[in-house]
Amino acid sequence: EDQVTQSPEALRLQEGESSSLNCSYTVSGLRGLFWYRQDPGKGPEFLFTLYSAGEEKEKERLKATLTKKESFLHITAPKPEDSATYLCAVQEVSGGSNYKLTFGKGTLLTVNP
Amino acid sequence: SAVISQKPSRDICQRGTSLTIQCQVDSQVTMMFWYRQQPGQSLTLIATANQGSEATYESGFVIDKFPISRPNLTFSTLTVSNMSPEDSSIYLCSAVASYGYTFGSGTRLTVV
Image (cartoon, rainbow over all chains, first blue to last red; front, side, top):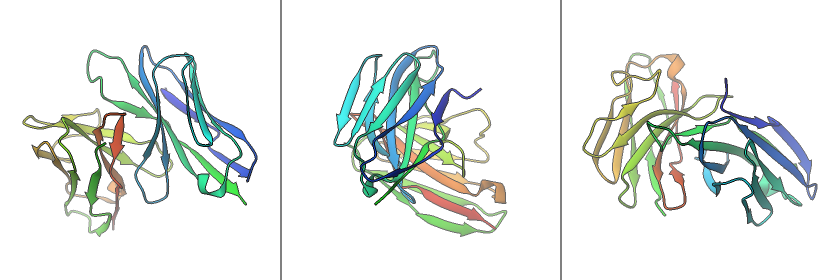
């Protein structure tokens, strides 16, 4: 059973058309939830870390929110340069490795001009 | 924040051979991580590498196949040994930064 599920798998938007990406997770205890952006041929680029339900963070056109079961990445008035794969990862509180990240498969966002 | 230089960026290798991937961090970091990213799949943690101790491998990954070195606090290597076409993937290293985790740019490996 997947611990981190991202939806949709792919999303096409017109420039200026706002939308949201979803990341649902099932862990016994959440240490942190991370959002990354990944461009083709590059490594993931850090966007946000969220630690507790109700927390929100913003950066330019992006806003991340967190509940006890899911996180949303809201994209307001996107531009073509926002096209990328957006990855969600969770860090679980555990008796073993507290540093392990478990990733979802990502959402491929395409913003057309 | 830590910046990671990873090389090679890509390689095409013959089956049965080995490839060593290097990651250099511009600051000292306690923990480094190696991930595999297969097409259509999520990033999967291969192992955690601490300086001065043996790497800790995740379920499904073994040291004989993916030996890791961590000689100091700024450098680590991952070797993909006795490669088969199933090893074709993107391999990424990562380190804990002040804000979370930073990643190298990845190595795209194709085994023919």
